[in-house]
Image 1 (cartoon, rainbow, N blue to C red):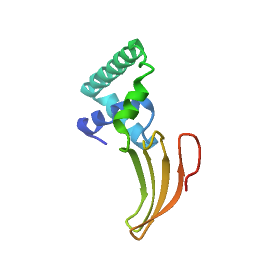
Image 2: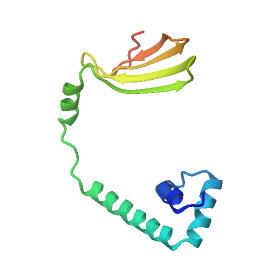
Image 3: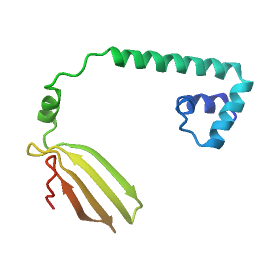
Image 4: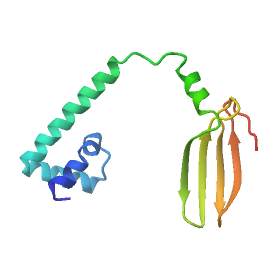
Length: 127
């Protein structure tokens, strides 16, 4: 990582300590030598501080917010995570159906889904 563009694209992760150690050291070496990237780093720090302050100043969401979201997303898939390869993988999804929030898991083998589990909001196993 030697260019300003590469360094500036990872500054937020650098500040959070989320980079691998070799990448973090490369960013630090670049920052020592580059005034422009140090200035960009200072701007990122200021922006993170301003965003943190703004979110802390926001009023909490009303108690009815979850009900409003649930009513609008009934039967709609909210999230899905797929891990694996073309031939085999694990799929975990979440959707809101019939007033419940099921989380389900499937194993995908050679293009076929094999249900592993489904847990509803109440903790029941439906399959």
